[in-house]
Image 1: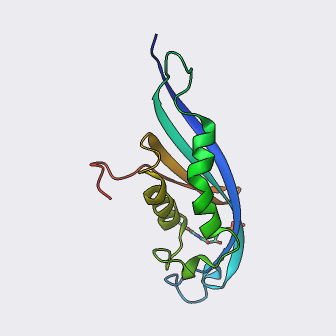
Image 2: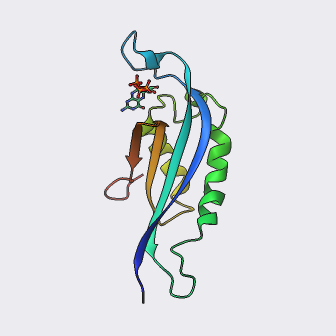
Length: 127
Ligand SMILES: Nc1nc2c(c(=O)[nH]1)N=C([C@H](O)[C@H](O)COP(=O)(O)OP(=O)(O)OP(=O)(O)O)CN2
């Protein structure tokens, strides 16, 4: 019997950033840090024999180089993250994982406990 399921694995890293395009006086224009969490989601059919959509370990392997690039870095200095909002960061991570994780269905970025941004790719699959 084939059935469909969704998996998620959560990663965390510490980074500094500032938002260059916020209005004068906005607190996020000053450099500050976050303990980010990123949830990587994949979705698909569960293999008859494996019982997996995909091995959770594959998500860790795919995320490792991304973590290396982000952890304890100033995000603004990373190419493509010159304006490192949660929205841009979620899409930036998506673009770095989607080739290795074709079942990727969402990237959820949290800067704080109360705020999340979810990116699910472009509707037509465009990059
Ligand atoms: N749509 C977005 N809004 C904001 C982003 C963002 O990436 N996307 N980022 C920020 C800042 O990075 C800021 O550090 C976070 O601000 P805020 O959510 O206000 O965080 P606080 O925990 O300080 O919230 P309080 O309500 O002041 O406690 C801002 N907005």
